[in-house]
Image 1: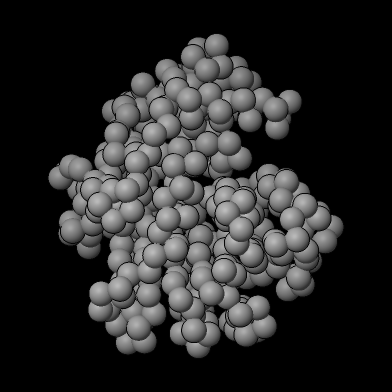
Image 2: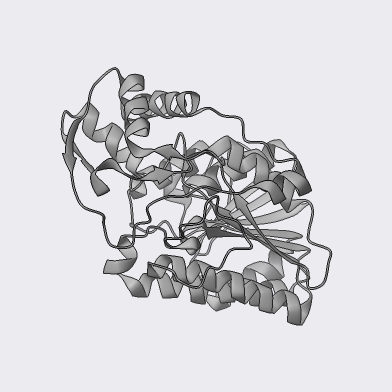
Amino acid sequence: MKILVTGTAGFIGFHLTNKLLKEGFEVVGIDNINDYYSTELKFARLKEAGIPEEAASWNRKVKSTKNPAYSFFRMNLEDQKEINQLFETEKFDLVCNLAAQAGVRYSIENPHAYIQSNIVGFANILEACRHNNIKHLVYASSSSVYGNSKKMPLATSDYVDNPVSLYAATKKSNELMAHTYSHLYGIPTTGLRFFTVYGPWGRPDMAYFSFTKNILADNSIKIFNHGDLYRDFTYIDDITEGILKIIQKAPEKQPPYKVYNIGNSSPVKLMDFIETIEKALGQEAKKEYYDMQPGDVYKTFADVSELEKDFAYAPNTSLEKGIGEFVKWYNSFYK
C-alpha cells in the first residue's frame, strides 16, 4: 500500500513514517518545515529518515538514502495546485494528515496561521482525496476539542461545541469537514483526538521538553494554575501502534466516518509529572507558579473504550519508562 503522510518532519509524523516503513508500506512524506519551532530539529528528523537538509527544496521529490520506499516533498498544504499534482502523479491508496499549525497558546497570537494550515490546507487534502479514489483518510484532531468539559473521562459522544482556543476550533472544524466529505462523496475518514503525546524527538513547545531543558540549564520552570492541572500523557509508540491499526481498517457504515480518542486513559497531575522528570534527570527543578493561561484546559482524560473494542488498542508504556526514553534521547541529541 502507498500512503501519504503529511507533517512527516513533525514529531508524530516522523515516528509514524518509521513505523509504516518497518511494516512494508511505501511512504511519501510532505512537510513545509515552518519555523513555529526549531527547524534544526525538523531537519534532524528528516536526516534520521535519510532526507538530507540540502536536498529538501520546494515541491521536488527527494528519495531517502536509507530506505528506497520513502520519498519526501517540501510542500505547503495550502498550495492547492501542488497538492493536486502530487495526488495525481503519486497515486496514493491511503492518506494520513498530521500536518497542522500546532499549539494552543500560539493560536491566540497568530490566528491566521491556523486558518491557512488547518482549514484551507485540510480542505485541499479532502478535495484531493475526493478526486483521486483514496481508500481511507486518517487525520489528526485533538483532545482540545473538549474545551473545559467537567465530565470525565472525555468520550467522543460528548458535546464539543465550546472550544476555548482557535486551535481547538480548527480541529473541530476538521471533523465537521471530514463528515461532510464522507457523507457527500463516500470518502472513508477517521479522525483521531490525540491526548498529550510525548517521547523522543518531541516538540520543544511541549511542557515536558521545556521543563527538561530548563532543569538541565538550572533555570526555573513555569508552572501554570499553581500546578493544579491534569494531563493524559500518551507515549509516542502507543500512538503510532494505534494509528497503524486504524489506517488499515476504514469505517464501513454509512457515512464511512469515525472519530476516536487516542490516549493513555490515565491522567497524571502536573506536579507528579514534573517529579518523574526530576527523577529521570537526577536534578530538582526551580519552580515558579502562575495562574491559568488563556486557552488552557484544566484536565484531559481519554475514554478509549471504542478504540479498545474496534482495534484492541492497549497503551502499555508507563510514565517512568516514557520519560526515561525521552531524557535519554534529549541528552544524546543535545549532548
